[in-house]
Length: 360
Ligand SMILES: *[C@@H]1O[C@H](CO)[C@@H](O)[C@H](O)[C@H]1NC(C)=O
Ligand SMILES: [Zn+2]
Image (cartoon, rainbow, N blue to C red; front, side):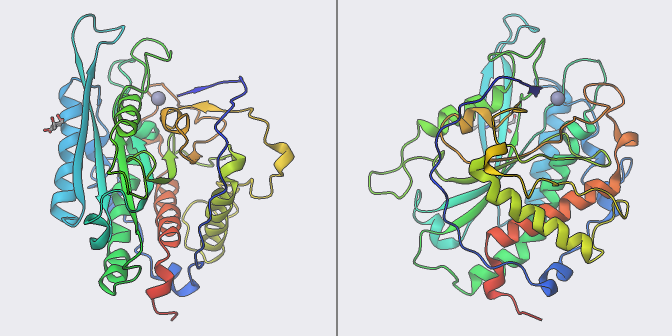
């Protein structure tokens, strides 16, 4: 991704109306603790297999794909595993068509499945490809760790969602599901331009927009079903500072920031005590959103088509950004685990599981 100083004139978004109950203290305490055995850079079941070069068209890309698919098949058989594939030439690879494969992992209430286009999806996103140069680059924050976090989030929310839907909660309505997008081809092959970057995201957003549902559906196409596009990128270094980038989704930023604060206060986050909050801009005023600090990333093709975006990327970027030091040794594992807990709680709150969970 890259930093742009240009003003970004995004689409005007209608304010979203999404009422939900804040999670109880009891529920926050009940969240499964992210495990060292998942995040150890050498042996962690979720993270370690991703700390390899994952360049599109290479073996590493296929290994990362197999890691995701076998995890979901083994641990989360209730989730649908879908692909959206495309090919493109790149300025580094001549006439060869390079494959880009986006993985879409979906969980929705059973009644939503029967009516395509009836419900929306909270959409959690990270890219799994790694940069072609420098040779051997593994992109631990960019974005191996965010991908591992999203796998963990899927597993952590499954029990709550399954219980809620088994009780028939929301039956008869359109429904709201969760989808995880593991996108390919985010990185430029030579240098960042509109055509040398975001290969996977551009292909997926265009295809979804061009895939209409039947005329009477609530949503016109899969792109419109994105109730919020939460993009995790460059996460895993210590002391991240995530600005609130968009006024239109500042309310969602505030929800996540409040969850972070509550978890921290309850002693449920592991990163250094007294650390600055990861999401410090809850109090940002409407007049302070001026389009500055926009970071070009996988959300661009979706946002340009009207999707509401919460961009979780630190400013400044981690010091190791796009260097060989962006590896497992330079991750702050406590911070990675904290992201898993924060995003899990945010997802559960968004999905409104509190309604059907005991207050405790
Ligand atoms: C898309 O690409 C993936 C990864 O190479 C492959 O496993 C899958 O079969 C492909 N799907 C389609 C529909 O071509
Ligand atoms: Zn990158």
